[in-house]
Amino acid sequence: MKRITAIVATLFSLVVVFPIFYTISASFFQYTDFTAIPARLLPTLPTISNYTRAFSESNLALFLSNSLFSALVGTAVRMTISIIGAYAFTFFTFRGKNLLFIIIVATMLLPTDALILENYTTIRALRLTDTYLGIISTTLLAPTHLFMLRQYFKTVSREYREAAVLEGCSDSRFLTTLLIPISQAVIITLAIHSFSTIFNDYLWPLLVTNRESMRTVQVGLTMLGFSENLDYGPQFAAITVLMTPILIIFIALHKPIQESVSSRFSGR
Amino acid sequence: MKLRYPNRIKPYLLIAPALFLAVLFSYRPFFLTLVNSFHTISLAGKRINFIGFDNYIRLFANPSFQASLSNTLRFTLFFVPTNIVICLSAALLSNRPGKLATLNQIFFFLPMAVGLSSTMMIVKMMFNPSIGIINQLLGLDIQWFNNRHAAMGLLVFAGVGLDIGLNFLLLISALRNVPSDLVEVATIEGASWSQTFRYLQAPMISSTLLFVVVTNIKDAMLISAPVMILTEGGPYRSTQTLVYQMYLEGFRSGNYAMGSTIATIVFALTFAILLLLLHLERRRVYYQ
Image (cartoon, rainbow over the protein chains, first blue to last red):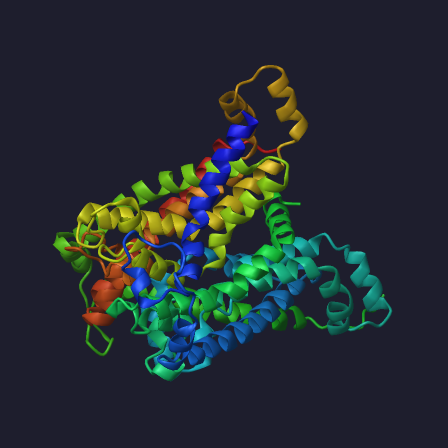
């Protein structure tokens, strides 16, 4: 029984991972490998010409840098806003605290995709179309992050802060030298999540960017001009370029990632 | 005791950015969308006059909208059970000790590393009827993009590919929290595999399972980007979904009022699902 489970699980997991394997393999295909009969799973003679073509015949590098830049800046701003917000909601008592917290966290209930019509109007009125600020604007508030950070900060004794304040420690110093370091694990997990959310966003960047030079890679990837002509090699190469760094991070960090999900949802 | 920072304004300043963004990009657009759905709107986006429920009446009589609504519901109906069965089996099968199991687990959550548009482009190319690997490898001759049923199936498959990583991770973490000695005792006492799942594991992972089901339903109701990249709503609108039609009406046809009306209906559907979640959570779920 145990052996059967292991075999079934392994076959199943191979099916799940097959598209990733095939994408990497096909990125080294020659043009004729795609039409070979019987179908090929591995390249006859691996070639890197797909990679050189992906970069030289499209703006992939530019799209990639647009995405990296907006995701990095977006993550930094988003984490800052979440951390200082969660800090205020955990360690301060003030009038309207609960109501304001609910107002911020309840934005979770409004699906962002259904808000794009009005948000686009806002961004256009602010003349922010085709700008980085326009791309990241609607992602800057992360109610889930604020909520989770507050849950975590609550486990930090309030006495720490009271003692620190009595000793003449400023809020910014308390945050940077104590609270952020001890919450490192949660903050890193949320930052990774933020980065991938902003990096992977599709619909919003599609709307707010018209100029090709401002396009993000998720949008640009679908308009490279290769797959439309059944020229799959460079398209698979572009996808491989995009996913490989993340695949490596995921494989290297599989333990902490699994643990962080486990602790996040068991409420510990 | 005199604190160094007795400042009363400080907490408000700290939460101001979050509050500002919540109002600017969530509440304001939400209320404007709601208001717009009861008006006629000019091409420049200005409200012209109040027309009550006329937009809704017109929308429900519109065959394109009827198609979107039924496609969205059908997609949800096919996608959610398929995805849950696949992700839950993956989690149950790989929830064992050993190196091979770890490898299985890594494979199951790797699709999470592939972004949305990459996933869709991979599916699009692999399922190309003439030179895609799937038809060739399996000796099939399915016109994935020209057949209504095949296109819907493809969308479901693509949706699973998109969600399996995270859902697997959530479910396996929940399964790991079921004390292994309990499972051992059950096995020694002669409980079958299905009994162990039904009476021991299922109740103990029920809150995670419910969370996964509800987020799946919500994601399925809101599906748009995969449709845009993969099928563009075709063939013959058979994969045109609500949010995709909202996008078409609002940005392609300049039919802003219709777009806002569809958006409002999407809000209503999402709220309904979230209320269902709250209701179920109160009644059914077993907490440790």
